[in-house]
Image 1 (tube, rainbow, N blue to C red):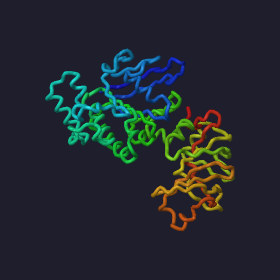
Image 2 (cartoon, rainbow, N blue to C red):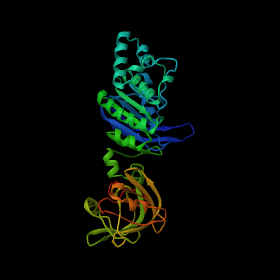
Image 3 (tube, rainbow, N blue to C red):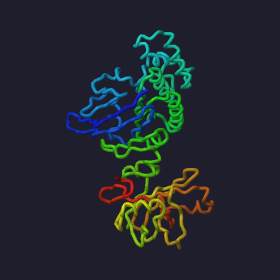
Image 4 (cartoon, one colour):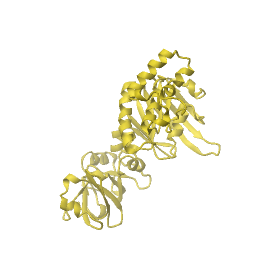
Length: 376
């Protein structure tokens, strides 16, 4: 098992395009860390530098306390699972998994034990004599994981391993990777663009954007305490709603006035604003869709809206509404809270009123986009 440390790591291509800027991260032994971000953010490039598949333009990568910048991939004691499986089509499943062990001249009886053990853990024993073309996408991914497992490497790297699978298989494989992690008890570094994978798999999440680290934290930390607008919108589905409004400090209390409503900031958010010495100012107000509720028209905290789109998701409705100034918001409403009559009334152009509690709000600076409470 091993820790991984990246210090001021950067990647600059020949055309002077910088893909990764001064990346600093300590990954503890047996930790599961997920690099997540949109396409082109530098997450896969960072993983490839750890693996030795990309040259490092600056900084150092250490595995188990040893600087590996100049070591070949085969000498870094890492195992990697790729997005496209990278299986040998002319070999059986058994031979694909055994391939790296045979390169090491391992005795066949040891190879047999390792391959069959890995196949049993992954539930692919019955496929050992098949060729990859006879397998489904999920089965091929299990073979690719098995090939990495048998190497007993210090670090397990996975680059978008589920992106080629359909939604049902992705859900299934996510659960299997969680179980696999418990069985292997090794250091995992996992790359994905899917924030659901990041939230469900990672001990810590590294959120990247344009080659920079935007935030590092546990799934709960990045969800509840986003440092800036990018993180706030990227983590959570549907994404966080943002609206321009006034944050008013009066008599030791804080209020927001979105679209004519008046809502008091309460709980820890009010206490933190007070500690930070935040005064009255214009802000970007953030509220997650699941924290918005339907309100009575007469309530002081009611925001008038028109319904634009109603998405029926089974257990809940996703209501796309627009406010009087045409700001688009998304509201998640549990269907159990609505009568059949109310659900039928949710049609295009319907007049709705929404609100939210003072303890669920986030406040961002309009210029820097930093969270006024957690942005330091």
